[in-house]
Amino acid sequence: MSIYKIAIGTPAEASHPGALRAALAEFFSMLIFVFAGQGSGMAFSKLADSGSAASSGLIIAALSHAFALFVAVSVGANISGGHVNPAVTFGAFLGGNITLSRSILYWFAQLLGSTVACMLLKYATGLETPAFAFSSGVSSSNALIFEIVMTFGLVYTVYATAVDPKKGNVGVVAPIAIGLIVGANILVGGAFDGASMNPAVSFGPAVVSWSWTHHWVYWVGPMIGAAIAALVYDNLFIDETLEPLAAHDL
Image (tube, rainbow, N blue to C red; front, side):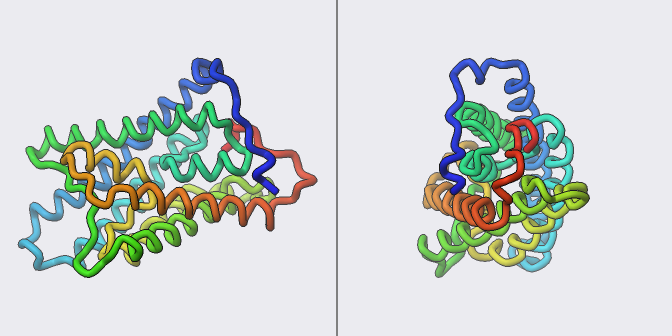
């Protein structure tokens, strides 16, 4: 089972030049993703009449996040693996594709990138990036299930297109596949809980607006979904006779 592949790493790894470059790549990828994704929602709200074009706003959010994530994953792929998501990093860790030491470095960079992006949006627009929230009638358990299932689909896609040693030419389309599953999931869950699938994406707006209501859902759900996807794909579909991926290959 993949749980036996977990590697802790060493504290010295966090100061290794390669690890620092990878973390910096995660920071910039996250900044690009959040600035474009969240910023497009703010721009649409400014242009649209209040509440009169909710369906159009959902489509705009799905497209902007899909495009932005495609770019963010692509520009970071050769340096950090283009995780752009603490949940993806957690899934990679459970599969033995990255050490805990490097994972912590990635998480810090991802959270900082999201926060900086939201601060830049606040200063550029004069508005606060709204924190993720539930729609009327949506409970914590409803939102938790949404986040688990949507993040499962995301991390399963990451494993199938970017992690699996048998991926072959499919790896070329990994960034667009990852972007598309996020866009599709936003069309499903966006109207209910905002469809985060990414603790860092939720963290930046929460810090800037200082709104933490139900924030735990946007951590617990994605982490559970990522863990299930990683363990399922790694144990069922990755051939144990093949060489495991090095941390820098993801």
